[in-house]
Length: 222
Picture (cartoon, rainbow, N blue to C red):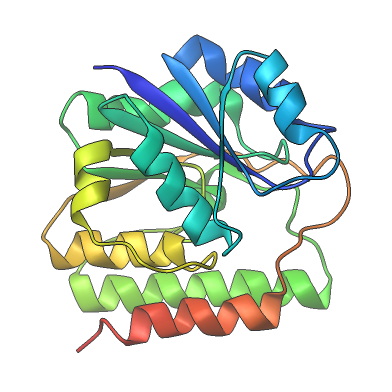
């Protein structure tokens, strides 16, 4: 099966080349979905051989859908552009999907460790929110997932297209999980390490995005 690497990026000029180079040994093409960056991210990505497409300025969820639609491979490896993904585990993430052993594979920071776990209020909220979502989803669908929020994941393109994803925010990650489980698909975690973001801070507001993520789960529980 052909594998497409899908990377969503907004002003990630400092790391985008590294991410593309790291992905290339594991995929047949790299698609960078650029959020109309002003720091040269798109130009660097194109120079590195990635196919660059522009999102619709609606958020990470919109950018992810644009990447899914643009991909030519049967399997998608979805990655972040900030250098935090465990590139050495790209094959472990995609292989269960390629071999038909799983429908959606998500890297697990709780199994593989994270450099982002720290004693700050923001990290406490993020970690507690992730754990509570894992508990809620496992209770509802009888699964044993350990990390539903990690954006580092693999899925068949036709499966992703069939889920009817419509969230524009970062809540698309939980929307993908919940809708896959509702369809009876096999969702699993594999251990991956989360490295610290190399440059700058995340652009996601924990409180704002957290509410969207919880809503994306609760509205599918009944």
